[in-house]
Every structure is written in C-alpha cells, then in structure tokens.
Amino acid sequence: MEFNGIDPIGHEEEPRRILRNHRLRRGIYLLPSACTIANMLCGYYAILATVDGRSSDFDHAAIAIGFAYLFDALDGRIARAMHTESSFGREFDSLADVVSFGIAPALLAYAWGIRALAAAESPEPLHLIQLGWLIGFFFVGCCAWRLARFNIQGMAPGGNRYFVGMPTPAAAGMVAAVVHAFRGAPIEDVRISLLWLSLVVLLGILMSSTLRFYSFKDVQWTRRRPSLAIILMIVLIGATALFSHITLLLITAIYTVHGPIIQLVRFVRHRLASRTA
View 1 (cartoon, rainbow, N blue to C red):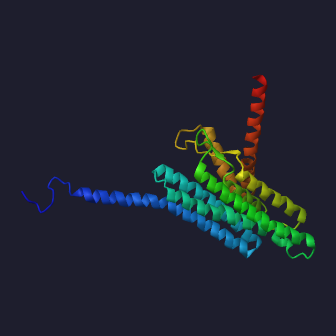
View 2: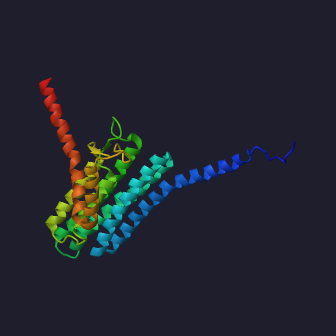
C-alpha cells in the first residue's frame, strides 16, 4: 500500500530526531566556546581598565582577570563533561589565555607597579620604567611558551594530577590578587617596585619551569564528601565574598609556593632513598 513516502509505523520521525540531536550537539559545542569568549572579553576589559590608569581601574582590571580565571576553568570542565573536546577548542582557548593571562596581567603589573614613578624626573625611575616593560614582555613570552608546551605535551606523566609548570591562570591570578589586595593603589616607592618586578620575573620562571603544580582534575566533585569538607568549602566561599582582598591573596600565594615545596620534598625523599639503598 502506498502512503506517499510516509511510513505508517512511524519511522518518518527519524530524520527529525537526527536533526534535533544535531542541533543539541551543536549547542553543546557552542557552550565551551562561549565561556572562552567570555574569558577573552574579561582580559580585554582588564587591558582597557589598566590603560585608564586610576586606582579603581587597576582594581577593576584585577577583578576582571579573576573572572577570566573562572570562565577558563568552566570551559574546560564543560567540554570534558559533555565530551566535546576538540583541537579547535584547545587552540582557541590558548589564544584567549594569551590575552587574559599574558598580556592583561603583564600590562597591569607594569602600570600598577611603575606608572606612578614615571612623573619623577630622577634617572632611577627612568631605568625602572625601561626594566618594567622588558619584564612585562618576559612574562607574556613565558605565558605563550607555557601554553604552547601544554598543547604539545599535556599533563605531567602518570595521570592528570599535576601540571608541568605553573598554570598561566594561576600566575595571572597572583598578579591580580596582589593588586586587588592593595585596592588598586599604585606603588610609589622604587624599592617596592623592584620587589614587585622580581615577583613578576619569578612567576614567569615558574610558568616555563618543569615544576609540578597540583591540577585538582582528579577531584570528583560529584561524589559524596564528609560534612567537614562541605563546611570548609562554605567558609572559604564566605571568606572570599566578605574578605576578598586578603583571602584571594592567601590562596594564590599558597598555590604559588606549593610547586617549589613539592619539588623540594621530592628531592629530599630521593636523597634519603639513595642513601638507604
């Protein structure tokens, strides 16, 4: 019996179902890309706010880098959860990271740490300004190096627990946390500026190093957790919301130093094992 190409059993719904699944799949792919674009937008805003140059603008730039950190964490987790990881998404994310965690924090570090000294006419601030833009470029170069190496080599051998080198969002977060802790008030002392530039150099070295930094990727957030862990999480969120200046600085500082500490512990264990062998 002819039904003009229509299957009376209902198989004509198959093309529609395939079309709906294709649209859903395309929407799932767009969600991580939207987070990456939001990450890049935060970095772009941080650059514009830094150029404006007021104390409040420096603080807003630091906060924007913090939001870029959140969006960068979201796009990767969404892509892995939805099984939508792709080469395009990885490269797009790296380009966004160069803007948000390379150029934006380097410009912020230069403007916040040195710009107030530019009005002085003594030769010391002049040399410091020249040193500042050079160190800022060093930071950007280390950021790009770290991202390119990660795209080729991936995580540290043995799983996904550790990054090789300090992650670029963490290094940028350290710069942003310091600026935010001072509420954007720029540095006006040459000695403090030198310490600040030394920190920026250290962060660049940590990014391009082979030290291991914990990734938190092995944490199963959907599993049941002890009530104490939930309470500590709530306390941490509350402290960040109410005392963001000091809390964020402590968190980023602890994460920055834990990589060298892990390396030191591994070195000591290796030495002790070699002696007892």
